[in-house]
Length: 278
Ligand SMILES: Cc1cc2nc3c(=O)[nH]c(=O)nc-3n(C[C@H](O)[C@H](O)[C@H](O)COP(=O)(O)OP(=O)(O)OC[C@H]3O[C@@H](n4cnc5c(N)ncnc54)[C@H](O)[C@@H]3O)c2cc1C
Ligand code: FES
Image (cartoon, rainbow, N blue to C red; front, side, top):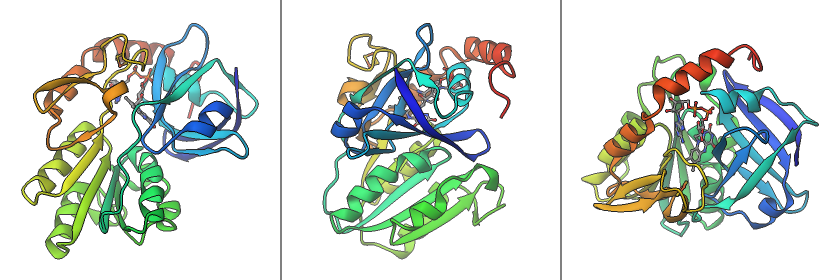
């Protein structure tokens, strides 16, 4: 059992929890994730390790409520227990000295780019953040990211804060003005990551994304998380989750994510309001 030490609501439907998890806190690296079970009978869900502190043995996770399990997690509070946390899983992100780099986050993906932004900065890169959300009330951790990045550019789809448009539009504008970018790292919805990869492809900028297929075991056993990368089948849980964006087949990733949409929606509607009212 793992104890939740703090829980904060960052935005509409988005929460941050700090959990006592000594082994993960001591061994994690940017880009890795955990597979978590809220209770013994529950589903296993993958969540990115946003922060880990080996001194106080805690990890931080940021999650968006999209279905049954994230709703159940959101109903927990400081002092409550999580049944199981497996990790750190996945390959760590490629973090090197590139010079000028851009980290791109969309929605809850803004939280997931924190570890890379910090690691890239610590190696002496000039780190530019490009972040966005559907609307102002869904934007998370912008001030915190400002304290890590050398520059930050913010947008919302509806123009309620910052530039009106998508992060890929903002990235394109940035790259038109600045031709020194050597690396781009993006996390967010599949269509967002695909759009980012199209912006950098012709410019030949090394671009990585964190693939988010459905996962079960997270250890390479079930095959559910398979993705196509450069025409080859890879398992995101052990070969990723980071992949070269110019090789990842985003359309297959998206269609596989939709496999259980109807069932997931039925379950969500059934339990909505029972355990979570945020
Ligand atoms: C390596 C990895 C890291 C992740 N890190 C985070 C994170 O830090 N924060 C966060 O909020 N989410 C993260 N996700 C997505 C998260 O695992 C899903 O949102 C979660 O499993 C949904 O579970 P649920 O039971 O609440 O919803 P479900 O009922 O399972 O699904 C509800 C909706 O979410 C979609 N969905 C289901 N699984 C995923 C998935 N893996 N990715 C995207 N959409 C999905 C479904 O298509 C459906 O529309 C990550 C996914 C992966 C693979
Ligand atoms: S989650 Fe089962 S093989 Fe990756």
